[in-house]
Amino acid sequence: MTRPIINIADVELQSMPPAFAPKGLATARLELRPITANDFDAFYDALVADPDVMRFYHSYRALSDVAARRAKAARDFFAHFDEGARLHGYVAWGLWGNAQLAGGEGRFVGWCGVTTPALPELGRGPELQYMLATGWQGRGLAVEAARAVVAKIG
Image (cartoon, rainbow, N blue to C red):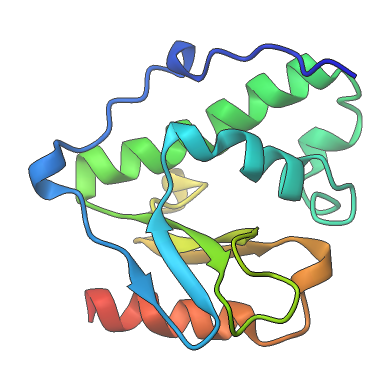
């Protein structure tokens, strides 16, 4: 099966200058790295393509065209992450299993980070958000990642 082509550059990502890019974080079972456009396929495959992960994202339910779904994910997630980084210095961290995560070493398992509110018109401040691939839920990884992120910004 061929993968629909999405030029993530079309989403107009303008990441932080390298001098300001944060270094990775580590927990007992995870390596956290700032998400970049190079992570889009892993992000999409592990999260957006999984209906169980996306069940609360109503605008994705009826979106069956893969190319349209990929383009929407690039805008909804990666452009949102980029905007938060550029405007506020927020970081969305990709979560990658390390050798201590049974069956997950080197695998993308989700993301966690501080983002701008999804509904800014409500006047709320930054949000700590996360999303885990179905097979990695229920193992305490979201709490582990969130603690590392909060300690970093803390």
